[in-house]
Image 1: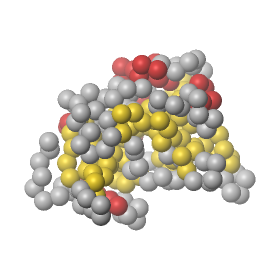
Image 2: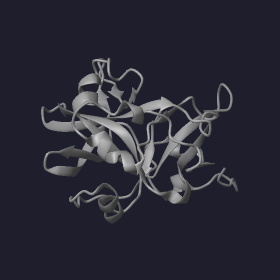
Image 3: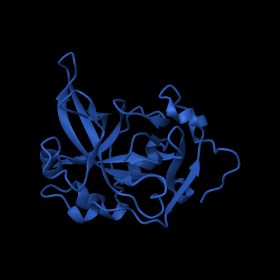
Image 4: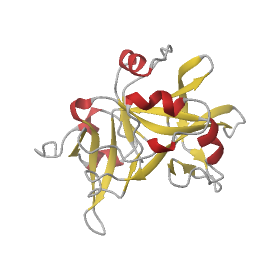
Length: 217
């Protein structure tokens, strides 16, 4: 699954990577949490756009649906229309996963690409309204079975779209289902971090600090 992620890349890097014209006021984020705003790449007939959206579709009981299982999104009422018509890319440069050590302890890991290269999750978006009746847009992140590299940490992982597949994922029409798969092991990197990241109050570079002297694995 994906319950926290980070985006610290500059606007210049994102503009070049995703071919978007917008230059919003985008501050670095080290610990993006559900219901918070972050940037999302969408596409319409005029081209690609960088939009600010809230993380989490509204669920039947009001709880945010922050992830959508790629295996069932096409038939789930909460996601099927978005999968068919409103796909997006969610820029990130890392995400966090919690490894169960025992019944009481979980170890957080920071996961990304070797060299810190930004990447993109496969996402869906929808139009909605907030509690005051004001329009807003929400997104969710698709997940799939974990690759062998991440399986020791969790059985699920976010769907990561390779740069050469951005156009296919954003293109109008039926979703490219072959993209809803586990990302290859080799480009990825991971290391342990402290439980500082557990709290949404912490959103600074301290969330990236390696625990002890653990090297990239």
